[in-house]
Image 1: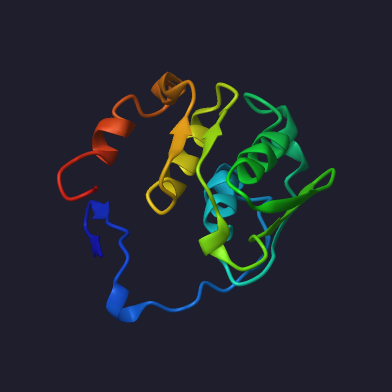
Image 2 (image 1 turned 60 degrees about the vertical axis):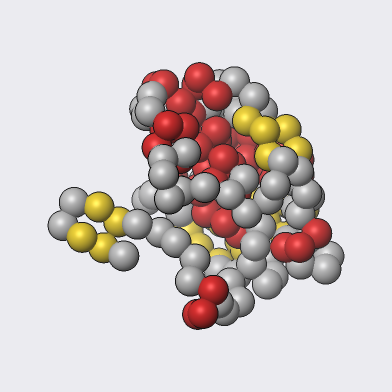
Length: 148
């Protein structure tokens, strides 16, 4: 749902459809890679994210950090110098499982994989305070009424 100053993302069970995998060059929007990778775990097949080598020199090696978070929840990931291929578990997203997410002090990893926790019970974000770099009230907003 889009309004002038807000976009609300929600799941409409009446319109559920399979989440298709994508093959995307993220060179121009690297800050979205953790979020896309987190969502890609729920796709019907592998999602390829390319042209992201510069993510290795962010707050942490963000490519390896994303891969570790994906693996912690049961996804498989192929890692290259400048790409990730996210593979949902054999048997689909229902095979994803709880796990501890170490964001490596990276606010984007903490936020992206906490959203996965809305669909996967038992996801724990270690070092949640790292979101203070960009969105100190993130977890308060995530727990706001009507948001689970």
